[in-house]
Image 1 (tube, rainbow, N blue to C red):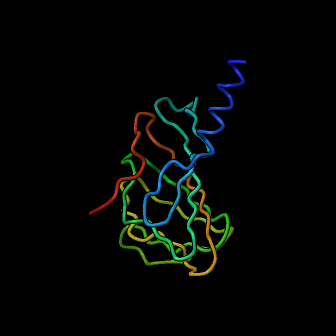
Image 2: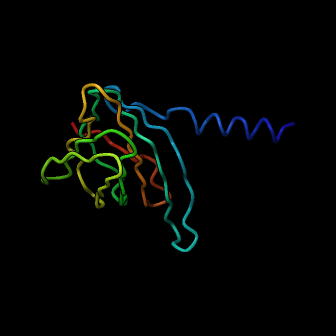
Length: 134
């Protein structure tokens, strides 16, 4: 019985949105595991849901983080560092190198929701994955 309760609590924790990082965006943990053949590194995945017209505040990620971003549905407008703004559609992907500044991350549609899967390769002791830029 105790094991079932622990498993149920873990499932609820994973399914519950972790945080809203910007106006209207919801970030939900999806996966986290240490990388066995790379000591000190972990793989962390989160789903970022943007309602129509929603956006993230400008932000940086943990300094050790290499990020692979995959658009699951809808369209996401993104700008990393001083690169150009670009709209990525469902099935497209991009990356952020360690130390990057994510100036723009938003739903490109005012009428349809969008979903992004962000996969981090990060130092295992880095707990703050996202930090707003003022």
